[in-house]
Amino acid sequence: MTGERLFLPRVFHLFQKTEDGFRFDFVVPIAEPDSPKLLLTIVMPTEIFRSSRWTRGNRLFPTYIEVSDKSVSRRKRNWFRLDEMSISLSKVASVHIKTGLIWSDILIESSGGSDPLASHGHGKGDAFKGDALRIKQLIETAQAQLARNPSGES
Image (cartoon, rainbow, N blue to C red; front, side, top):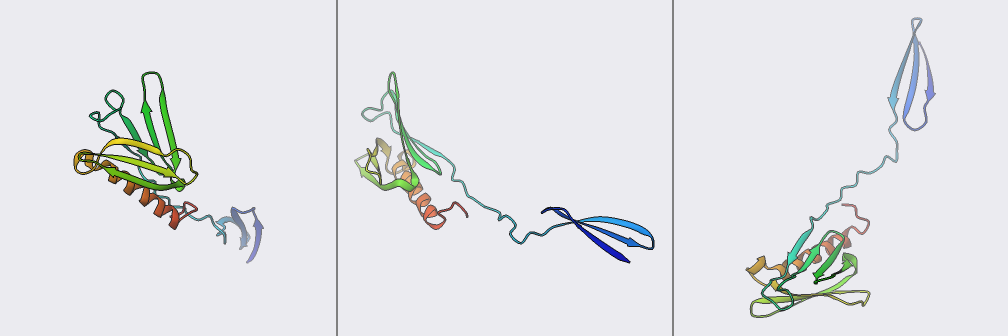
């Protein structure tokens, strides 16, 4: 029995064997020593929070705050324009919540020193399911996850 080994680059080894005058060809996959790692990333679902229409400046066009796995955005419509501002989660320096009797104001500051995201009229307790506290919790959780895994691996 003789065995002859041919090499196909990086994918398979082709083996040829001759036994009792018959030729056998078979292919064996290569087990690479540096096989690619399976990256498991947990993507946070995007949550959108609407301010109350009962507060100043929000009667016709309420302010929306959107928290995604990459950034925090504030959208404020007007009669003829849309003002949208976003901050990357890695650049959020602080989240300040100012609570009133019924509503909460939220101020999200960036580490770059630009204008902070400000919105008023969000629920502070059971109203609107505690929007202001939920926004703060989402940002802090995402920042903690970024601190644990800065490359995005899980």
